[in-house]
Image (cartoon, rainbow, N blue to C red):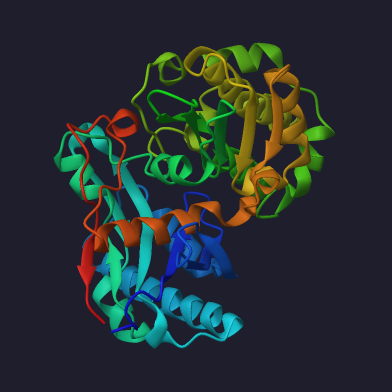
Length: 367
């Protein structure tokens, strides 16, 4: 067991973009979370391929999922060890690891969401208590099980003097509305990097479009964009969440992209993300004065420029302006969620997930 009140928690996040593991050590001892160390572990091609394959129905899923869960536990444990080594902190001083696991199916319509990780094995390998399976309790209470990060955004970024909106541009884009007074809300707006990365991988042979330069070389196809925007998800009112089950290459191919220049399709996808986020903010977050972006999309200069243009006159920055590196916000959220679980405090926002009320989230695996 860690020393009482050490305030040190590890957060682990591997998202729908399937690029790898973000690991952070967060110090809560002062009350305000402080990033003490961070580390990224890219997924090797076989791990990424198997996780991607398990996102769709296939043969022998139970055995393959169990094997991948074990492999992920090993990778998560290595990420924890590397992060603690960077900070010079022994595992015995860490109160808990908050591990999101790897989502392979998100089906709130069917009452479940699957995140793969053998949390017991992770606790054994890391020598640290693990909190995992954060979505199930919210789903059991009638919620979507997502998005979960709005509660962390509210705890860290809300300000009594300014109406802020936090936009997470991960595989999926989600928005958290943080008015100075009143109800905090959050929801998924639709695809962000999930389609941009997939299209870049197909045509560039690269895992992503670095800084959005390829998208910037093309021109958005307005008829194609209008056809994509007709998907009913974009007009649906919150609470709502989504994932690869809806927005994947098959969805993209149904819009006849094979006959268009690949760079124009990439530009159209970037415009789709920026427009759906900007329209969601205008519709659902009236009075917002500032948009603060986190996630991998914050490093995409083309996407950020599109969002700034469409959100104007609302100012668009990254969470770096608020003192938190945008690359590590989501992993920090799972460190915070682990702490909430150990303190017996709710981790969800019913206004974001649609659950019947606040719930303590996560299952605890002792070291």
